[in-house]
Length: 634
Image (cartoon, rainbow, N blue to C red; front, top):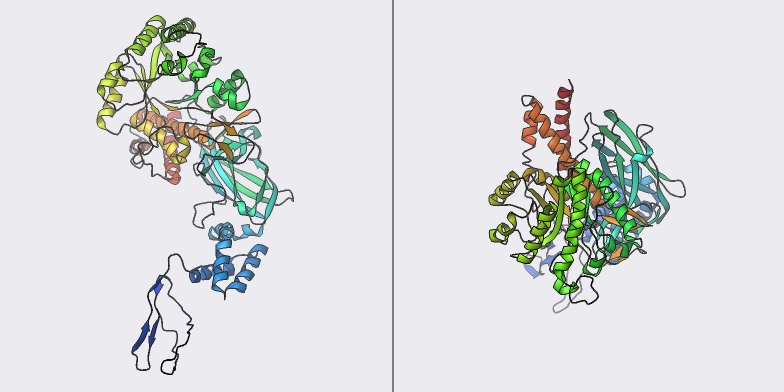
């Protein structure tokens, strides 16, 4: 790129000499060639072009030296700078040094690039991000990652707002790191604040994703581990006055070294409605859960249902695997009246998949029912008892029996389901595993089914959108499996692989398509799981898996927290729509009508919305709701 000097070389005829030339390349370090000329400028030798296959060591050296010159004093940084000087004249040693220390330097870069150089004078620092980000331990932190040193939250009374804090060590080992203090002075009770550690799950194939929110927060953190993530929740009291509240989350190690995370919480002047405009189903199967969770089916089923309900998820009792079919009996859950009052829906029980019987049940001589018909007759008898109780409670019109995955042209199961409906008066909900197999398949069951659950794909065509409207006009309901991975993934419930923002966008699309419910199949993991190691080791991926066991308790995942956020999002959308309808001439109503077009939300099958876009939309919508809510109160 630039002539760096001239040298004379005199050789006798036929003589050879090894020549070493210093090479200075341009800023891009993309390629170069060596050219030798004689005294008259004639070309004696031209080398082949040398091309860099990766960023050149020279550029990396310049970047590293610039960083060391600008970074604040820290003992470890000083030691790295001295080592860099010692090896800079040996190209091989320099490259090895840069490769070996890149990940460590990444931990120091963020607070400098983020304008917080004073942070790295401590033994560790923190960074904050939204609840939707998935950050795996051990992954180097990029200097341009959109992270923050403080937290800004926005929510309404009765809402749960979440954020994440990553703690990064700057010394070889931080011992007994723990969240020491989390408060908003006396404004918010301590029972409304929680901090949990994100524990990673080995899904097979080496993919690690923070997922399980553990109550075991204390951890020793080695420098090479990069970071540990904490997930924090503020449950805003229903009676908390609107305003700005200041809080802090303090981390401390055994030596007393601390990192203080400031929190700013904006509380809105309106309350979210108690009832969700859509139902979110998650199935519970206590027999399968008890094999992994080491508790009785009744104990573990009650704990899973209780946690699910507290997050706004409606737990439905699914049918066990064939080995437990004889132990399975239809019964109403103890809290069915409370759930009915809140959701206007009763789950009366589930019937097993008829395909199981010739494959797993009837061939066995020790089965209690000699035929498929006899097994279903027993279930219909149990449904009849349940229906009498529901009729007595005045809930029969809101009550549904579930059958899993109706097949194409199955007169045997159709006859069973017709008999069940005629004898009990219950409505029928079922899953259509192949919704696009053709209208013949769908029309065969259209008159029989009252609640349609569609699996394997979203409705992208206008004909299917019209079908949803037609069914709803007939008084029927429509449900989606959680389905953001379609059509790239052949199954519709690999929730564990889906970005957090896509989970929340699922609810925006439910609003847009006017879907009545969504289903996360398998609330709990029911395969083999090694709970003694970190990361947790599983042998199965896919399904919901929204809760996990720990020390006899049922704890949520990061994804269950995001499901709750999605449920809250759709409450915002419906509340805004209702207020705009009641004040149509108000300027904020016009703004809401524009916002509710959701033109920014993109294609449901490939969510490319950023968390920042979603949160900015929510804040703008909340501003409009506040204006209309103020007008309503006046």
